[in-house]
Image (cartoon, rainbow, N blue to C red; front, top):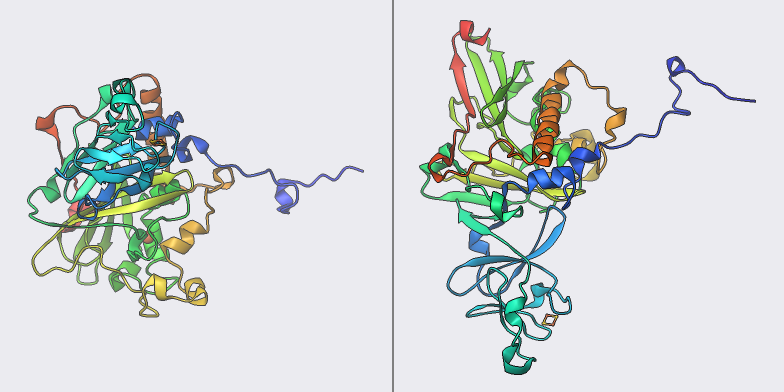
Length: 401
Ligand code: FES
Ligand SMILES: [Fe+2]
């Protein structure tokens, strides 16, 4: 006897197996999205944390690397497996000219040149023929950035207009979403869950402002009018709210391609954003938040922990029961699974921003696959400054229509 159920009956039995859109979740070397992501600089460490005392392990875009600073102050990023017989350079010793492998002492400079092979005759007559695989790094705004793509396509490291007049910066790696809780440094689900969230301003009304209590400003509990648009650097969404006193308050959030966001302060103050955040894939299954905020006299850091409005606790202090009662970004995104099952989604009108962003990724992946240069990749140092375009403003009613 055959059992046939129709979709109209709605039974869970016999539903198709769900699957993930791997085109956008896979970021390893040689994958389409991995190749796209390798055309950009990504922040991988805090400059002040890297001293010549010892190297750091870094995992980014699915690659295991070792980052070190030599005594002259130069930073270097090497493939972690020593080219001799493969032990990790994480256990290496930093000395005057570079990083020396702990096992047989091969010495590498910041660009992977092999300078010494002490167990070989004459310190290794053929050492010049070998180079430890390496990636370029640059430092800016208190962060160390890596470029992991083809050297011939290395773009200039962008500058961001809102950070350019800063004398000092608060930088941090770790934490997630709006709670800014740094109790874990690696977020254990796909970077795409978070990227989708960046283009989803509607969840601010439900998740952060009504269903689970007030998590930001009480005024955010008013459903905004949302507009999505393309910008010169990626995508933008604007939330407009008319307050009881007649003023219209607009929040402009800029999502800078491929993996950055700038959010203006979650207050009712008008003004420019003072921070940017990168969503850096560690691998296909996890990512880190990297935050950089201009230090402003008299202001607390942009990314100070935002305590839950119901319990008064930081996310890391909440019990499992409290996290169920008052879920936030972490719960909603982890709840989608390490990778969401995109085939099971039913995207609606409010998901326009998510759709726009996924299309933008798909198009840029194609451009790279065809040999072109994707957006926000520039080679002219004179044009390195990016206009971020994230701000809060009060506007006349006509301008909001
Ligand atoms: S494994 Fe590194 S020098 Fe031998
Ligand atoms: Fe959020």
